[in-house]
Amino acid sequence: MESTIAEHIEITPGVCGGRPRIAGHRIRVQDVAVWHECQGQTPDEIVARFPELSLADVHAALAYFFDHREEIRKHIDADKRFADELRAKTPTKLTETLAGTDTRNDSVPS
Image 1: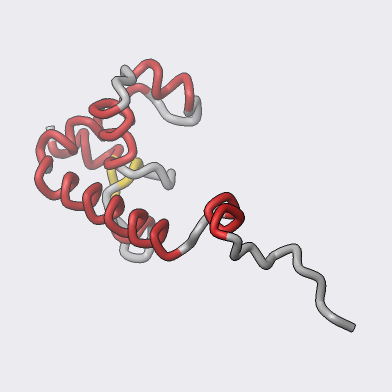
Image 2: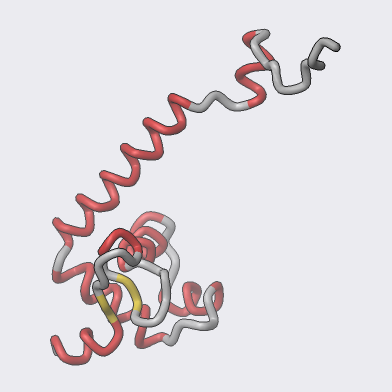
């Protein structure tokens, strides 16, 4: 079984943060896991969204996820924390406008 998964999943330092991904693609195992586990997408639906993937690719990614659930969940949690921190540091245009601090459209004095 490991050899079948190895045909579809690769880990390359410097590519996708060195996280497991579908071979030949930048779609990470954790992406497939989130689509399936959190968003309820079936493997067929994932392939329909990403026709460059085979059904075997998606099933291999899910098998890898189930074999390495704790590791993949740590990656997902780390990415969520990073996104939350970035979101907190980077106000949206709406937030700035409501706070009266939007300076992006201010003209530069001559």
